[in-house]
Length: 283
Length: 280
Ligand SMILES: Nc1ncnc2c1ncn2[C@@H]1O[C@H](COP(=O)(O)OP(=O)(O)O)[C@@H](O)[C@H]1O
Ligand SMILES: [Mg+2]
Image (tube, rainbow over all chains, first blue to last red; front, side, top):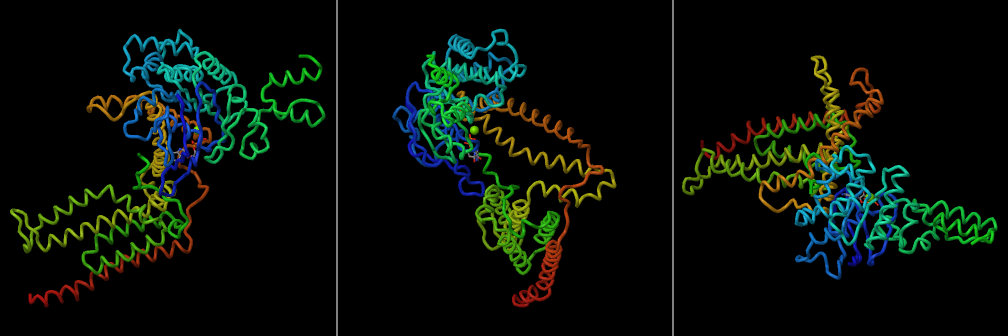
């Protein structure tokens, strides 16, 4: 289920005063079952990049391969691509439209032409996966809280059973608790289903804890493509791109400077705890 | 797809025309329309053409961008042209079954196409070089005298500028919602009329919800800043004429006068000349 982007560029409104090059010469491969993070400041081209992955945008130049097949070919099954690569947009709750949560989650699987039983099964399964409260399933989506709306909207995409799930800033506009819940849920789901997940964010803390690999976008280009540790080692350069390494990385680097023997590439609080305990000979 | 719309669009720039007071441009557009209709012969058309070319050069908007707006009215031009060409009475030059082309028909057809093209290009220079906000501010000030007869000019202008401001936002929103529903397998292209109309529901419901939400937020934000209509309200950037605006007014009036003079000269000397040559 691999996706390969080969020298992909994207230009919005070519040939007039509003012309913007949102992506230039981006090449990357998404491996099976990986948890990939994409970060970059606002306007760096993250949303544009991921919309190429399920065929919603066509590249101005370059090629995208899905399972080895060129997606720009006439006979390429574009509808299948959209159902196999599930896309949760930023503020996905803005797409809710049916009178009840249940019916709204049905929208995707119904469009796949499945039987009524199959649709119902998938809807309940998806709502369970996002830990949506059972008693609210027949409520109007417009009566829910922000976090619940977002869960319902994510379930609407999960119900299509995509092989690859892409989430564009799924925590934007949520309070810290809502943010941790959504991220925890995505992580749990990834561990359970072993699906490929692409998580877009501009917050390092969000990403550092979960992903196997990070892509850093800057001005429409890939700046780094590495493990979290590899990327955060460059925290000085990241600052110039308007990004920051997790706060804990700064703390550990300061400790190192003051003569404590800790490693400099710590990215999560759990790792920091281990390192500090190690100083006192506790394992 | 909606982003291709160019009529009424603003083209950012810093030309002499961009910097003029919006009231000068509104008046200019009005006088230009008057001149286009006054121009009834080759002399005055040449005057109007020269004026139009001068403005297009001065405003520094690429010609290709300006002509894009014309594409949408090509069909209208062709139909109106055909009607004028075949259905005008006069001296018959060609006969084709029941259709005939007359000398007056040819003249009307050419003048009609020139006039329509000039009107579209001329007025789009105004919208291309003036932000919608400046334009409504200009309208509000120019029509301020209507307040005396209890017409709420300020409120109408405010509604207009809010509406204009919301168009690109709603276009963007529609684009986003369409993409989100397409990602859930929605299909807007196939099927009959009924199915297609039904497929719009997943777009329209979220679009209305978000439009109302935005309207609500904006109203709250305006109220929080003590907005209560036009009475006693001052401007952060009041419109003020400077020397180049005054010069531009003089040029505009000179231009209309020139068109009228061209008409008179033509009628007095040239049309008489033709009549003599034809021995009438
Ligand atoms: N639909 C669009 N039309 C024109 N320009 C766009 C559009 N979407 C994004 N852009 C521009 O492309 C650039 C990248 O945007 P985007 O991919 O949304 O970045 P990010 O998701 O990282 O914030 C920005 O400069 C943005 O203004
Ligand atoms: Mg984005």
